Image (cartoon, rainbow, N blue to C red; front, side, top):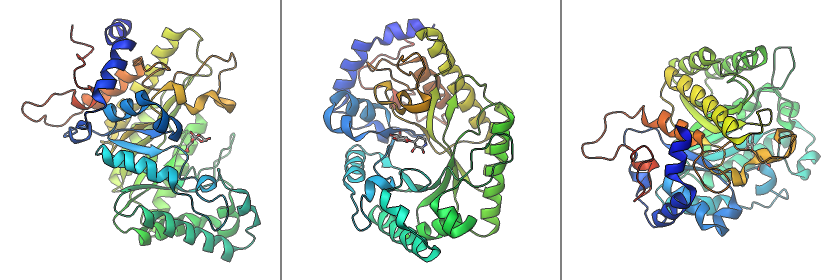
Length: 380
Ligand code: XIL
């Protein structure tokens, strides 16, 4: 079935269709009733590759700069702010009627060297305040959702996870999270402020413990009156583990019952431990994405489904510990290296399309995922 669809959608046809769709700016306005789809954006192909831009223009309603708002990119020195990456993604998003998401204000990783000189609570708080004020103000009214604190839950093996070590935890203690949210709220009172984390989606004690730690953190923050508005499930799914459907659904429902919005912020499937053969690997990747999204939707309607990239050509998963030991390229995303839609594309699209609320009369039910002129792959 999937290979039939793939044949029909064929890569050459898709690429050609994407190219014609690139002049079509209507995708973002055709999302009524449909949870928006988004992807993170790598700046190099955004600037250099027409197919990449066409894929984003054709399919996305939201974009997240992949690494251009990290501290180390933004602030190579203490006094310098380098907004070029964020500004370019924003310009592209605005030209195409898409929203840009802000990722991320506070993270243990991607910190520039100079921050190692920070040596007191006062200095840490001052730098945090300068940073959040400057970055959030620059995009005030434009970036409507900020991933304020990223990955606050510690990685542990066995014991209950606490907060992850960082310079913020070291100097400001566990209230660094409160401080970050309050500063972001001050800088843009209308922005939606979310907490974002990973490894809460799969079956296993470690995942359950992390889910619980995140839920406890959220309740504590709300109890202290922190301006926290939503939770991001990154969704870097681990291909070899099943999705904990009840766990995910329960977590999402609980967040909703606390009055929070729920976001899928960085969906992809780590396929390092999956079989090398492409069609069975792709089928497993699609199954994980399907099960995860079904579990999310069963808990509550998310604000966005965003994948961490749009094409396998630029996935972060070819590097470091997530790379396949056999050296084969990772296939975690909706489009493969050559921009052919993968089974994950259909699983993700169908998960979103099947939860459309009341369709508009006469509207094309596949509009946002169907670039102009491409027959829907299921039609023959
Ligand atoms: C990744 C980026 O994709 C890479 O370009 C970067 O080198 C490392 O980080 N969780 C996150 C993302 O919140 O920011 C990470 O992105 C992936 C894990």
